[in-house]
Image (tube, one colour):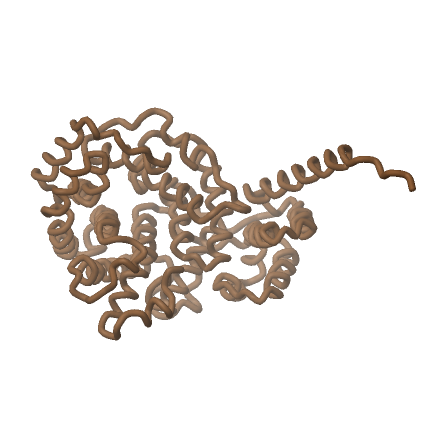
Length: 434
């Protein structure tokens, strides 16, 4: 088998220059930056009549995540996004991120000081600091109640990242090992939050692709492969927010783009160009209609902002690396891939990736066989159709089909169930003679 990578085709992607080129990626970063400016204006200013309690995230979180996008954009070469735009958004953010409300929160809740000060800390790292906020954070750090908050492991890692970003404080040894980066995730039955725990730990452990902080507890290749298997589930759920975060694994871990990750990026880019912004799972007609006509545009912005920001972060991260998404073609039969696509099309669900994959040629479809097997096995496992899980695993036993972490977990699942079944058969009471 020989694999050949080539740039992703622009065919079918509406408008714009060649897909995944610097110009195309820059266009997508600018689009995210446009939305960032609108989001801060509409949500933080609270002048739109928007029902903030209905939003996916409170204003504090929106501001912090906008600051993270701004820092990623500020690190790009001059000309990607005009410096004046970066400075203007930083000034707009500083009014909220470094204002009296944040200072009061830091003083009142020292154990949450870095949560309140997150946007300020990120802005400072991008060159837009505030000595007054620094002093408030230092007072909170010295407080007796400063450690009075218990957190999930990936949230501990977030705190360590903020401390490193703010003060250069060395993270606790072994901290990343306790997160999903070290322990992995359940790719068959895991919840959405489990996958977010992996993607967020990756962000903090790599300083959003800038550097390795505490060190990775497993090999980058292993983590990237797990992200690819999780990506199959996210795309199959049309969860573009989660898919975008999983795609950050390639640039953040400085790996070459796999066929699955390249295909995932192509799907997200296609949907973004079709809709104008990547839609979020939280965007629904009922929520839209609950707002009066004057504030509906603000509602869409508020709900879709995070998915758009993730796409901006992703494109900015790609622009900082030499590697680019590319579709691999392999010189082997696409028969297995085509049979899997046929089976998946028999399901009434029509996720976007399944419509997009039909645009590819046979060699490109063949390269995506591991991705298709992951999708098929995950669907069958969640329906407890164990016979289909076994059949899909057998389809993947070919030299041209690389193994995936999800298929390994599926094989272990069948082994556990077979062992449990054998034990139950031994323990079953003998039938009583008539």
